[in-house]
Image (cartoon, rainbow, N blue to C red; front, side):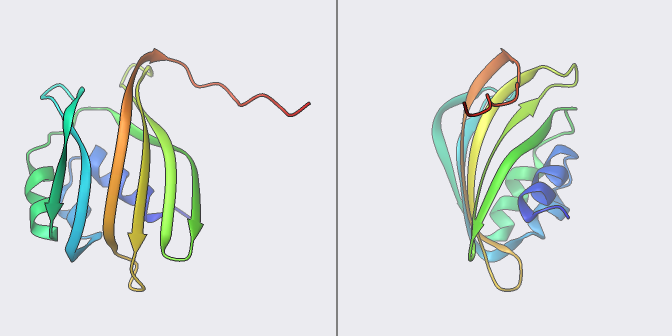
Length: 131
């Protein structure tokens, strides 16, 4: 079963602003690093308040063929923390990210913060086994 974070990234990757915004509360707080027009991380953060603000930010996106891949996720009560990477259409890794969300009892995101780092050309390999 997909998590709300995976649902969010799936809708974002399809540039479906309505589906994305529907996952957030009316009074959500949404923070993330700024991105250039080409999707590169640039200095600064966005802080948006409210579902409508999230919708308007995501409405400016177009489908790029890039996709977010969750590597792991942990949940404690209403808090979810995850990490993953962004994969280009050719399969290369372009960025890694961490995301933390708070989910309401109704299953909507009331707070989301994500940070990332460029990882152009990186490969994803399994973690070494403990000795």
